[in-house]
Every structure is written in C-alpha cells, then in structure tokens.
Image (tube, rainbow, N blue to C red; front, side):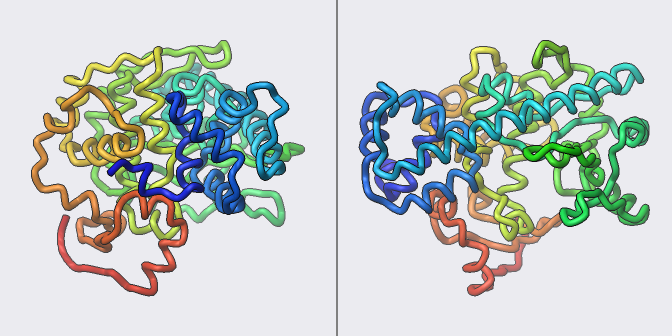
Length: 384
C-alpha cells in the first residue's frame, strides 16, 4: 500500500504542494483536488503549519493555472496562497540583506562562520526566496569565537533576549540565563534585532550554534573546526558567503531534523515533524548545484556516531518522496534495531519520554497530537 492511499484528500493535496516536480499522474490528481470539495480551512492550516505555502503557490501556478483563468472550487484559497508567497518573498529578501551584513562584518573581523539552511537552501535548493519561509538564521561558529561573534552582533544592535510584541522591543535576558543556555545546549540564546517600519520582518534573529550534537550539553569542537575549515563560498544575491561543504551541510541538516523530530519539547510546541524539513532534504539532494559524496557522509556519520540520526531523516524523507540518496544507502548504515523511529526523548536525556503507537503519516498530519499525548500520558521509562 502506497503512502498516498492512506491519506485524505486534504493531506494528499498538501503533500503534492511540497513536491518540486509532479509526475503526469500526480499533475492530474493535483488538478482534480483543486476543483474538489474538501475541508479547505484544514488545507490552508496544514500548508501554514508545515511551511509549504511558498511551494504550494509555485505548484498552483505551474500545474493548475495553465491558462491562468482556471477556477479552484474555493477561489479564496488560490489568492490567499499567492499573497502568502509574496509576503514570504519580501520577508526573505529582508532576511537576506540583514544576514549578509552580518556575514560581511564577521569576515572583516576574521571570525570563521558557516551559514546553515535559511538563505543557503533558498538559493541552492529552492532558487527562490519566496518558496521557503524561515523565521531565524542559523550559523555555525567555533566555541572559541562565539564571544567575539556575539560582541560584533551587539555592536550592530542585536540583543540576546526575548521579544516583547506589545512594546516592539527585545528584552535582554539575565546573564545567568545566557550562561546556562550555553552550558546545557548546542547554541547560545538567540540574538535578535527589532526592525522598524517593517511589517513582514519585525525582527531579525540569529541562532549561533557551536556544536553538532544538538539539544545536548555534549561538545564537538574538533568536528566543528574541521567543518569550518572545509567550508565553501557560494553566491547569495550577488555576494559571496560561507556555508559548509555539501556533505557537512547535509549531515547537519539530517541531525537537526532528527533531533527536533524526536524532542519531547518540540512535540509539545508543534515543531517536531514538519513537512518543510523533509522537503529541505529532498530538494537539497535534487539540486543540480549539489553533488554529494555519500561515502564521505557515511564515514563522518560513523566517526561522530550519528548513524541513527542520518537513518531517521533519510528513512522518512524516502517515505514521503520515494527517494533519498543513492539506492541501498540506508542498508549501508547497518541499523538492525529500528525502534528509535518511534521514540521521543526529553531534552538532553536518553530516557524515552514517548513511544509512538501510530504511523508516521498519521503523526505528520495530526497537528493536534500534543493534546492527545497529554490526555493519554504515554510516558514510558527506558533508554534509547
């Protein structure tokens, strides 16, 4: 039984909206769904929750609006998705400008950095700043230069704190809280700047990360330094910026996806398994600009003990999109016990907080799963 056969019309349409290239049979299905009666509020909600608004408009424009005058069964849906795409594009362009300013300043000061995801994926995997929305900007910096980088950003008006939406300001967090975050996490408290007279990007935020072992207190200083030394320059909006070598960037993305997908905190915050994260992997691997040496990826995953993270992310990307890397890749990871595919863990812990009983696709499209978890209290003691 295929994945599509288990989905509702609403879920199938959302999945099709996330695919970069539809096969002929999928195009026909897409067009029929656009003219079918269904719960359009659920479709719109899932597109927004799963970060698929931008790609949804591109697929509507490419596969449905062939003549440009076609009418969807729910006309407001098309115009609303189009508006969201253009809003994302304007926000993405602003994100790009502010992030490039920071990159230039770090370059001037001799601080090694590499951009992760965000505008890099918009450029390399999507080719369009409106296709993929992102609320913050991830950057990898070695722990020895974190303080220098923070000082640079503070000079540029950024604050380590939390947003007060009522006063349009960033409230600095206490020094103690800032220090504790760095001790128990892979990143520092986000640096945020309020942007005046900017309705689509009120705040520009950067997450400075200094460890690959996300959501733990474990450090990977040597691996981070090696990745930064292997980093490459790419062109973003006509400016050279640093990102990781493709194998390293892919490994980071796979780790990041898995750690969030298996985090109890992220489950309860509706951020664990979101379609755009798997879409990122799929589009990255399909980009003509990206050539991945899978032997390097597998060797680095083994050296750093991230085989399970790689397996999890690629396994579910394959479930959704039918392919993820070279054929037989998952078998090369030699993982026999796959119970971890259904497990969720507390922050910085190997205890098992949740064991999922339902399928991945049921979880993916059930945005109300946190309330169900609270009711059923599925806490199960044990180790990963």
